[in-house]
Length: 224
Image (cartoon, rainbow, N blue to C red; front, side, top):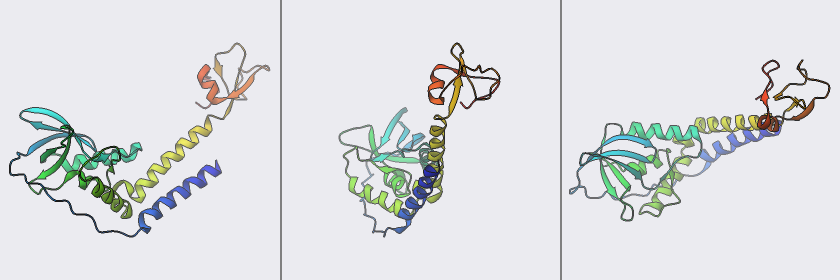
C-alpha cells in the first residue's frame, strides 16, 4: 500500500511539473472558410465532447466533431462534456462536412466564426485524435501541446489530482481483494476470522475468490 501511495504522489508531481515546465510555441493559424453559401444550423444538444445533435432541414442529425478524442478517465470526460455543452448550448453553427465522411464535421460558431473543434482542444477539453486522417491534424496536435503546457482544462493540476485520487482508490479496492476471509465446507457465506458462525474447520480464502462463490455474512459483515 505504501508503495502505491508513493507512486500516487509521484504521479501528481510529475504530471504537474510536465504541464508547467515545457516552453510554449506559437500556435498555428487556421484559415477560416467561406460561409457565404452556408446556412447556420441550431445546436439542439451535445452528447459528448466530440458529438453533437443539430437541426437541419427540420431533422435532428447527430454529427461527430472531427479530430477530437475523448479523455480516457471518467471524471475528465465529464469535465470535457460539460465544457462543450456550455460552449455550444443555444448557439448556431456553420457545419462543414468531411469529404470522406459526411457525419464527421468541422463546426464554426455563428456569427464570430470560432472554429469549435480547434477551440475544444486548445482550451484543454479534448485530445487530438490519432485515429482519423483530417485536414488540420498537425495543427490540432499543436493545440493539444499548448493546452498541456499551459495546464488548461483537463490538463490543469486540480483535474490531474482528481484523476489520480480515483486511480489511488482503484488501487485500494484492488488491494482489498487480497484480504483473507473464511468459509466452511457446507456454508454459502464468507466470514471474518472472529465470526461466531465459523466452525473449527473453517477454510481461509482470498476475498476475490470468495466473492465469486459465496455471499457475505450479514452478522460479521466482512469486506465486500
